[in-house]
Image (cartoon, rainbow, N blue to C red; front, side, top):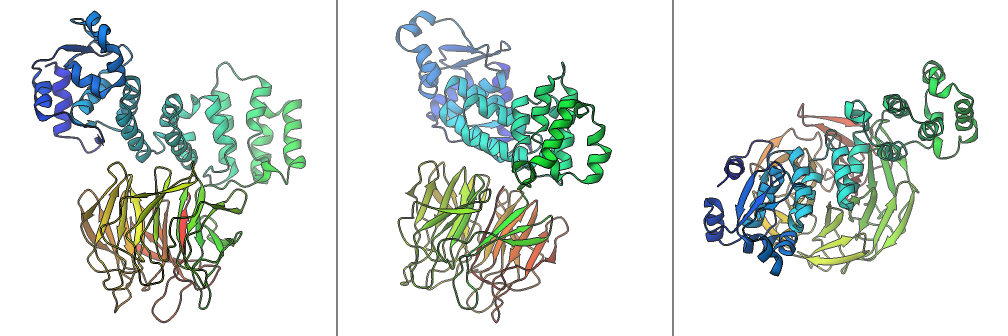
Amino acid sequence: MPPARKRARASADAPSAASIELVGGLAEKPSAIAKFRDGRLTDVEVVAADGTTFHAHALCITSGSEYFERLLAGERWADTAGRPLSLPDVPKQGLAACLEFIYTGSCTVADAAELMVVLEAAAYLQIPHLVDAAAKAMSAHLGATTALAYWAVADRQGLTQLAADAVSAAARHFEQIAATPAWLSTPAETVRALLASDRLKVAGEEAVYTAAVKWLHAQAPPPAEDDALALLRLVRFPLLSREFVQETVHNEPLLLTVAGLQMLNRSFFGALHGDSARRRMGFEKLYMVGGRNASDALATLYRYDSMANAWEALASMFTSRGAPAAAAIDGKLYVMGGYDGQNRLSSVERFDPVTNAWEAVAPMSTARFCPAAAAIDGKLYVMGGSDGQHRFSSVVERFDPAKNAWEAVAPMSTARSNPAAAAINGKLYVMGGYDGQHRFSSVERYDPAKNAWEAVAPMSMARNIPAAAAIDGKLYVMGGYDGQHLFSSVERYDPAENAWEAVAPMSTARGGPAAAAIDGKLYVMGGSDGQNQLSSVERYDPVTDEWAAITSMALGAVTKSKCAVFM
């Protein structure tokens, strides 16, 4: 066997801390894999871009790659028999991973950078299961250092969901990205798309202006004046501070021209109420929707801005909903089911924060009261709940926004009303809840690639009506009720260890609170302490393992509300 195969196998046997496993293929029989490992009975040589040769079996690689199938089919195979197959566009690392995946159904990638190589190799060789696995892994590894590169790969390969995720990550990490040397060589089309985005996460518009000017000055040859001013028009000048305009903008050579000054005048005086004055949404907003106060189900929607530490009221839903489920996909908030004071609901509403408006979408197949929800890979999952007639559900439905349609997927092993749910690394976790007789400590995990649930380590105690959220690949569960006591305790789950640990408790016991994570911090709000419904909000910092009180909810005391964060 060639040395490249030995190195690839060593990596798979002992992956580094940064290695990434890609799964989802169909493995060959063990005997075929053994022959591949040993180089026995191979009948084709495949040569990577650097000249490294891999020995394989034509029958196996044609069954796993549409490219090889077409290349080696019928008479073509006869014409090429005995000659190496040269792949000058496929790097060694990418080809090694593709062959490993074809034979074993999985492969290990060294790091986040190599994911791009593997995805493009899989796309070239037409291995759809590996393309899908690599794209999902790339979405899970998006950050300031990968967003722009992954965005470019997604555009080249036509991977719309990965592209959308990368755009969101680039907007979320905009200030960090604009501070790197990579920003200066970012394609103009990408720069324009980011500067125009409502969803840039910036401390102020000054950061957008600085990034635009910095990029323009780095271009060689310099852009034409019309092109430079077209880019600068994407800056929302009325949002700049007076001091910044006087000290920085008025001294910028790109703007000290007749056309530049005219553009500034139009920006400041002609569009104060238009797009150029609209504040960017950013990613620091938490949305609290529905629930119950002391007497009624609520249709209200409130948004919390963590930078301003303030709540604001937004457009109300069409329908009051106590104990609904909620999750966000592609910058829009979905609210499902609940109770309107008379009926359990199957209806679903979607909120667009840009227009501050709701619309109805396809209803679920069944009415659900007290379900849980989470989003994975651009699709929405709703689990469990009850119909109000003492019938508790294990049914799981998935919503595809592109089709405006729901479909049933594998049910949970246990019927659960009032569970908590969150997604980590492309998998869905559901924990706790109640089936009419028992309150659960058990936890189930759903893998969309397998359409299957599995049990993972249980929590330390039974928790009905808890809340959950994920931070940095770990799951946090807060509060809840075991039939006798309401809890202030908090547990953290590490998927790598399949183990729970206690962290600092909340200051207040809460049953039926809402929770979400923003910028690495956990927010828990509302619920009941057994005597009163709560309006208080607490924030947890996992770095210090401490909770702090923040501004109480503007809507007053509420329980069984839901919240979601646009990431």
